[in-house]
Image (cartoon, rainbow, N blue to C red; front, side, top):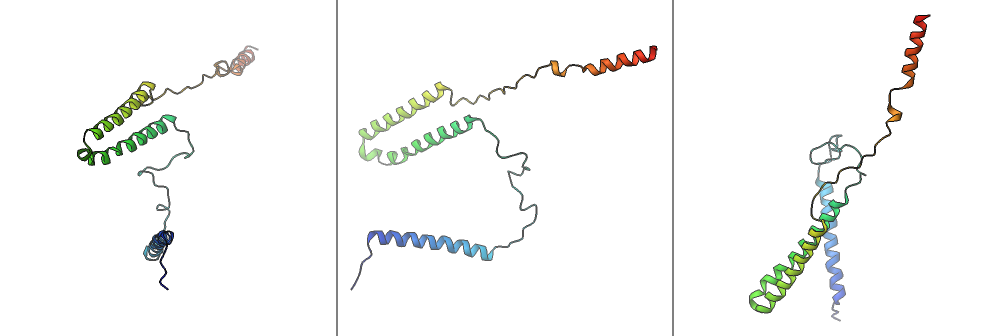
Length: 154
């Protein structure tokens, strides 16, 4: 008569309990928070500055490349924390493995530096040159001056 919950049942109960806590938190905050919207409160907040222009502008790809490189090295450096905790217990083997890992990281950093992915050089914009013949002094002004001089002489 005593039924036990399977391992999947325990996981399901854990997830269901977590979901219930999240929903209860949202419902409770919705019930007790003040709701007084006004125009300034409903505007987009961007570091205290008024938003100007469209949000759909193209950014230089270097922003994304530098961000990805940072994330990759940041995550890889996190592997040193568990390594450092067992370094005394394992001894020289752990030190050798850690140094090989560090060498691979340094090699990757040197490769990215050599390729120029890390250097933060702002590219100069390529502004096309407009033909100047279209924007020279209009011919109509010369014609107007000629016609005025012809009318004054006659």
